[in-house]
Length: 102
Ligand SMILES: [Mg+2]
Image (tube, rainbow, N blue to C red):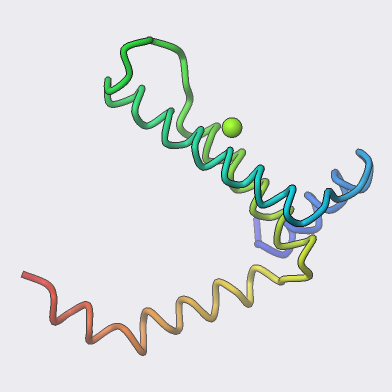
């Protein structure tokens, strides 16, 4: 699935379920979902005393869904955002990272 398709699909879901929250509310939710990814990874690695059935992939999916909703609410095209960062890391920063390889 292309990022633009994912954005359209999330947009459809959000609009059918009450519309977009305030952008800062979505940002807060994004932070919450990132914390849940950290918790799932800790459980997967046995770093949490309480056992539970956290699913890292599911939590990453929650984070991605929320990031897409955040992009939509801010009028951002994720294909363009990702294209820019890939160009930056592949071209501008490529040599810098190579120099740090051991
Ligand atoms: Mg979650």
